[in-house]
Length: 248
Figure 1 (cartoon, helix red, strand yellow):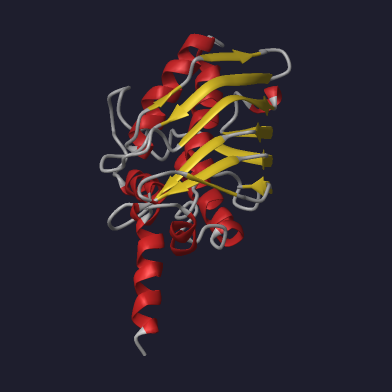
Figure 2 (cartoon, helix red, strand yellow; figure 1 turned 60 degrees about the vertical axis):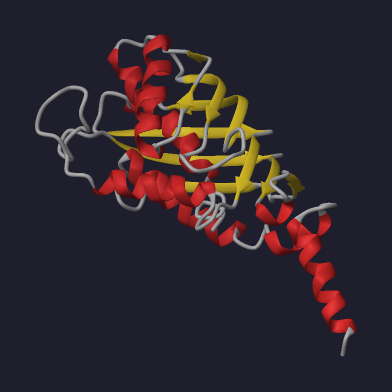
């Protein structure tokens, strides 16, 4: 469902939450939610998305999603884009049978994120690009396995999304491929989709990505990180530049 261009971490997470909320309508079966997260999350991001367990209370709409894994698109070498051992979600039960589902709160604490810079883009650039491509695909007229038509697709509003205590690392050629710990600020987004009367899952992921980009774009400087890693290309480049300067 830049840091999203540069850390689009919520894009992949929201895919999971949204898919779970939608499939909750189809029988309140946690196994269906888990399978839906893997299927639609993987289709949207073009990366492996899986979940270990889902627990949603049908009475109050509150629950948790456990062991969420979001891999990397092809061409990246790090082990994953994001892992979350557990995060909570609260859906408004009164809205689940309507055209617009309200997700009251999503709280993600302690996500494990690896931000990798490849030859032409970062892993999260690639994920965001794949989501954008998914949004632009023509809606299917039939087949339950295909993308739902715009007319039939549920829309969502998220009252509050919080991402706190993220354990982030960054890796690139300049760091010798070694992940380096970086600091990321906490994020709080409110009333997503409310002004437009709801957003499709993919549209919601795009909106979150744009908001995060403004807040997080300056959080990682790969050139500076490369100089901090012993033996990294950035350190070597810095030493070479120093030697050249010493000749003048």
